[in-house]
Image 1 (cartoon, helix red, strand yellow):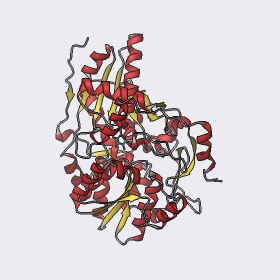
Image 2 (cartoon, rainbow, N blue to C red):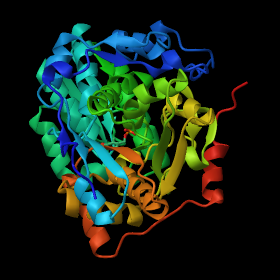
Image 3 (cartoon, helix red, strand yellow):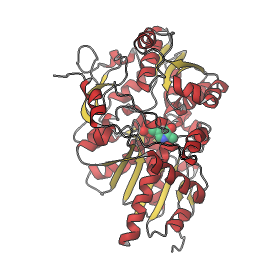
Image 4 (spheres, helix red, strand yellow):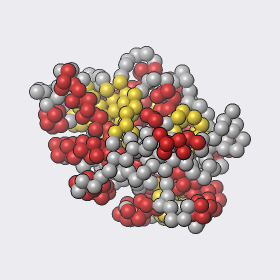
Length: 457
Ligand SMILES: *Cc1c(COP(=O)(O)O)cnc(C)c1O
């Protein structure tokens, strides 16, 4: 079907790795709404944010005008251990599907943390070290972010305290041990080590925890200890900025062979990998230079873009974090057990939320059995065993390729393969045993989350 003039893997040279991150907000006419103080509802000032976050990261968070920001040499050196990551032409998948579509995926699973999260973890650890801090605190759901941050902290000699959602802590002991191998301390959340943890345990005894709850604990732990700050693995605009390296490398690789994608697809949890992948392409679209079809893919069990409200909301359950305007299901929304742990956050990056609200991006939700069907189909022909999160993007890439088969269109599809699924074999097992359910919340379920949204003037 194809003459294979494009290599199976497009590798970039080390010196072709980007020297700057791209800040898509610089090209947005409608900027994302500012973070608000949880009590006064006034825009957060830098000094207020600096009590919680590292100084340089606050600067990046608030900067919506500088298009390109230098990647410090120390971060680039770390990136060089596992980047540039390959852009793979999915010839084998195309052949299996018998589609005229040309499919590419950017593979971010080629490091020990197993996902793209290391791209931001190393940047955040670097700025914490630069500031002379002793350590950082964070939360982790499925464990990918905690693992990435542990690696980054051990590299720079920082203490790393991870609050891990209790259900994952119990179900994913191997993730926990990877973090401990890199010297992190891991506490199941909610815990008795924080005031907010105690409060949540009192109100919900026996709770298996949630991301929003672990965030509250990590923030409290950071602000209670001298020389510590809190870091977050997604949602914030600084994280999208760091993840822009994914999109910049993808664009460089495609440009080398004169390829222009028609459709760009990514899974969306808090929005960082998708935001990073599409940023440079979205920039072209915003500047009116080119047009692309962007698709965000989310689980039907946690549909923040497709069924959420665009409103100010709390980022955490304990309501200690700033308010962000985003597509949200409400900070009180607790998604049903879903095997894509990294996609279970109630809200979405304020940058992606604004772009979506402006009609610049499409969003789709998919049920998990169909996601695992796609995962397996992909694994069997392309070799890589994908993370459940990443497989959301695979699902829609295959759907789009099958549409091309019907219409005969030779569209070029690019998707983000964010990571590998070796720690998710319990989910694969459920799928293989036919025990996986496709729970979709009812409008009634969602209403409960919406009823808890704060009233902002
Ligand atoms: C965390 C994670 C995601 C989702 O997070 P985003 O911030 O939306 O990118 C997707 N895939 C993998 C493998 C992850 O670990």
